[in-house]
Length: 138
Figure 1: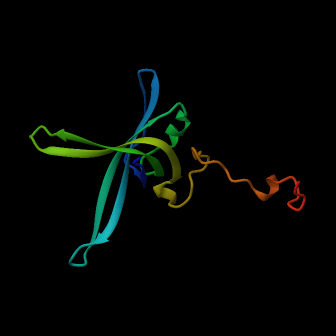
Figure 2: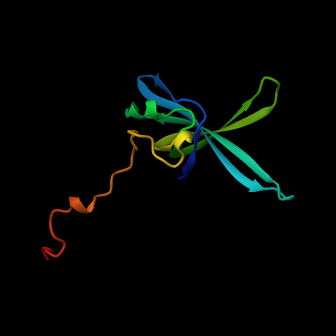
Figure 3: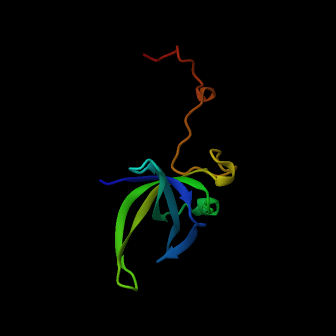
């Protein structure tokens, strides 16, 4: 099993498509890694991931806007192609299994108000426990 996890920002607004009667949300995620080269200069390397989220849960698509920070998880695929001028190229694609909204550039680190997190069950709070912990049945 190969699994890909990406945290990054959306490069443009997501597009909701219908292919052969099935819903797919297409979007791109950019992850920028900062490092120092051999001379000690700060460098940035950005990796773009083309994402396809095949789901009936399309309610997240309006929240997938350019600049929004997301966590996506899925299975990777590398697609190769030849450009019009004859050069070879490759792109990283992902079949998304889950997506979680993390925030946007305008409010870094804060979750988008009213934005749902998909495939993330809420942990029970202390108020959800109705029986005292001391009264164990065994």
